[in-house]
Image (cartoon, rainbow, N blue to C red; front, top):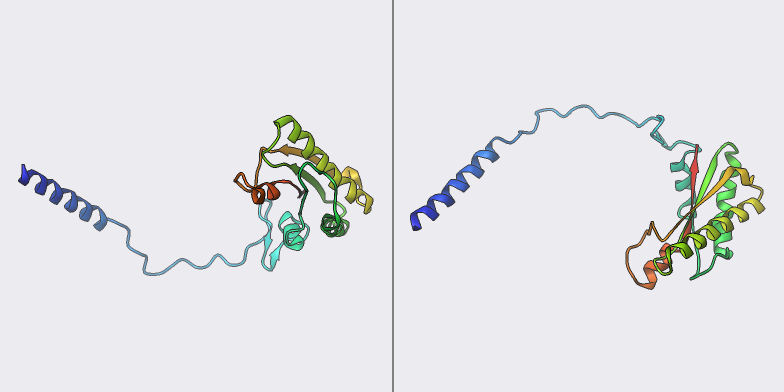
Length: 172
């Protein structure tokens, strides 16, 4: 019996060594660098950063201001949110042909139906504030995801605070 175990172990080790010996060896010369990225239909990065007017450009210029946050069971736009939305409005005024969707989100507490309605109120509050800053409301659509798309997983106040939000996403 002891010989069988030793033999089996030796067979497994020999097999592992044989398989590892068949692995690919590194090439002697690496292929050339593809060079700077270019703008394509799906890509949004140019040789010097994001393409102007793209979603990547919007996110880069907003530096976090593409998202506003709300208090528990609230859809009011506070002073900090107004600053972020003013920055969004400035970008949207620079690109008058760009449209945007504002996504309303909630934390996990409450029923699905209640959170869908609350997410809609949050998205509409952001849309209305952008409209008050001169952005044509027909350029902005809203959608509510309620509690279906949390950004932070967890059942604590820190996670819930991150999930009570409205996110602006630009579209072509």
